[in-house]
Image (cartoon, rainbow, N blue to C red; front, side, top):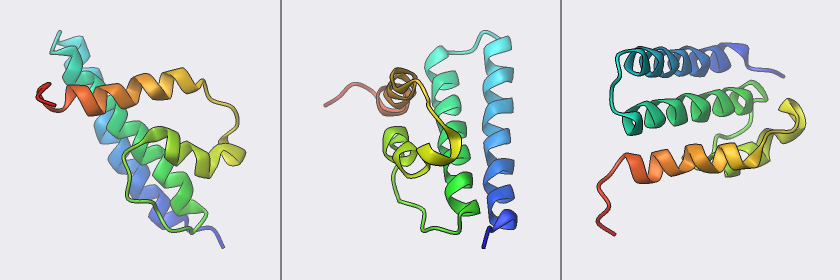
Length: 98
């Protein structure tokens, strides 16, 4: 049975990330921070679909992994865009120390 209440909670949080990204972008803020906010929003939207399906949400930030759980529900996505968004989360969030 779909869990629309739980999915809406994830969507609400995703909207916060997208609004923050838009505000930061429009105010010429650091693009790495904008990228991290966009990644976080996409991650939460993907998790909203999983929540709606009433499935256990994987504890991962990897958009490709999350997409693999929902690809039949949302259709085809340009994987290179997900890879790029992942790079903002991994490389934009922390200094390059590894």
